[in-house]
Length: 151
Ligand code: IDP
Ligand code: MG
Image 1 (cartoon, rainbow, N blue to C red):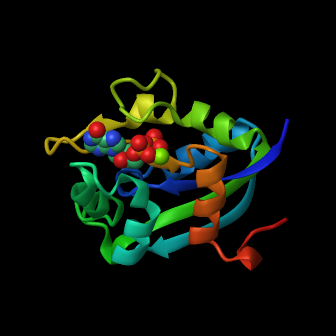
Image 2: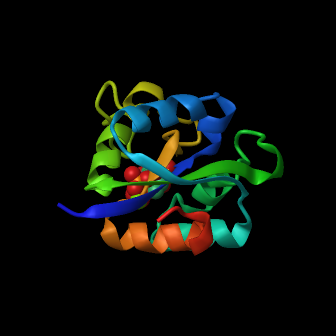
């Protein structure tokens, strides 16, 4: 058992549909500790760095538009970034969040309950959650300064 930190983003569809509180409630009830939280204006550069591993995917350019709120009319490219900490937090948070494709995400998970595939084919799945330990370390460092996280 390892104590891990993991990055969660309330994506623009989650912001627009007022699901921030619901996502935080689900994660809190799952027993994870919220150790970092802020609103972020997502620059083009931050979006591209965050999703760098997907840069060769056909959906990449739409993914950058999506995470910057361009499909949801979010002003100032705003989203909410959170860091959760806990035992096996990366896998545990992913279990609460559900599978990437909203059609495959289990009922009762955040994505299974609230995700959709847009008419453009974009997976709008409400929240981002780090995929593995390597991603989690990289993503927490990308979105947060060390002093913004309670250790
Ligand atoms: P994850 O968010 O579950 O870790 P990734 O494979 O890392 O999934 O993909 C990042 C994001 O890119 C997804 O959450 C989703 O919004 C989008 N995405 C992934 N695969 C597809 C796809 O096949 N079509 C459209 N969008 C996708
Ligand atoms: Mg991922």
